[in-house]
Amino acid sequence: MQDYIQKRVLDICAYILETKATVRKAAQVFQVSKSTVHKDMTERLPSLNKQLALEVKTILDENKAERHLRGGEATRRKYKEIS
Image (cartoon, rainbow, N blue to C red):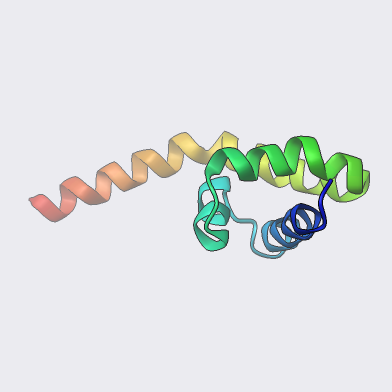
């Protein structure tokens, strides 16, 4: 793995652990695609640091479990503004 990719993987990992950010938010902050963040966290990070990969996986699983609630809340706010 090239050095700049390793650095990006570890930087994104640190950001997600620090802020509990979603894949979408991390992608926005680091100006890469959601697919890149997902691949970095699920495929590349485990080869660099298994412990960090487990911690990030816990956060990403939590975010995935809550995403339908966030979407519903966003829709509720959208229609509340229109009324």
